Length: 498
Ligand code: CS2
Figure (cartoon, rainbow, N blue to C red):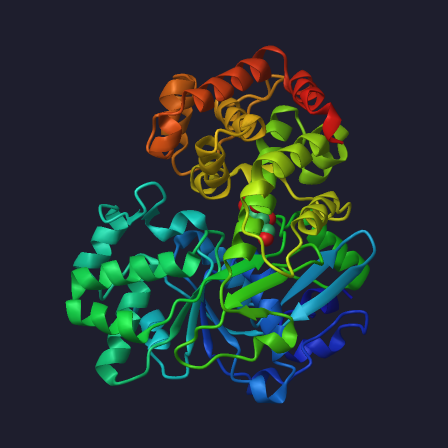
């Protein structure tokens, strides 16, 4: 028995042992090609893009569009070893209040992990079969400064890739070198498809790629500028970190022994600008929205959903909650979130026919309430220095310029500052997970003025007395009166609102 359990996902052959309750790849995996090369096969990619491709591969004329997944960071070593031991198969266990779906995903055909040399990865990326290079490398992986709107050309890894293009360290180094190899061999370039949560993700990917290429070879940079496309895209599916209890549940209820299952919500959305330079899969057949311009979608996603997470994450952690679900079940927090979205975020979003922002806000809040996923606040609160400038500051900048209300948004920044001091309101230690943790913590302790004067904040906020005052007011309130009283006061001022 134990053997059967352990083996179910261990090879392709054993897939047939799975019960019919489990959705399986409805196609011959041996016939799948690798038209897509994807950098970063973490949980989000496996819960999102890989699932769309798994749907797509059911169409016989789409079999070329399987995935070769790759990772270049040492942290992914064990993940790759585990997935390799399962023939790149894994389970998606998705849940909402009404349903649960268990599905084995087969769209990842091949996996490459950069151990010592970059060669195998570069060789694969330069094969004519690869038509698209996509990536989920997190918000912080873009070597792009949000405030100066320029490439971080003094970043050590960027400098490394300039000096050693044949053995790159960054995703962009790999992209540039692979494109150089293709150009040299007379192979058509690939489309670069960013799948991370930043506004204009494709435009930024282009700027970083071209800037790096220009430092290596101006003619290569010109070729990339004229031949390669970088569509902007919006990706969405809440994917909590998988816990041991999730794996145990799969094992007990479905007899699936999977070392790397993912456990997202049932909702998923993918919107892509239809600019592909070397062909593309028929993603519209599987629910992907192919559009001319993603701006309205990306603003709504980043400023309502992602900023909504930040709004609940820091203040919720200070109150001692562990998951988004717990926080939003508390009416104080839901009201605070609704007010902030409606008065301080929504008024500045681009309107678009077919995108009803009230519906969108309601849907997001319903998703946050999903009782059957456990989305950890620690996941939401990590990497604040990369997320806050992309999720929260754009709304704040506009609201300050318009001299409108910024109470709720200032409270997000205040709660981040208090969080960074490292203790919740009961004195329990908070572990700060951010590449800039040390300097952020130091600045948080040095006071609101010093905190806001750091490079992370745009000039318009650094010089706004009102903004600093509001943040100061809420830091004091959170620290002296506590989270509950602070939110009660905030909500009371807006009592007419709900
Ligand atoms: C979250 C996102 O990291 C965060 O702060 O807001 O990971 C969010 O869950 C995804 O963007 C959902 O698509």
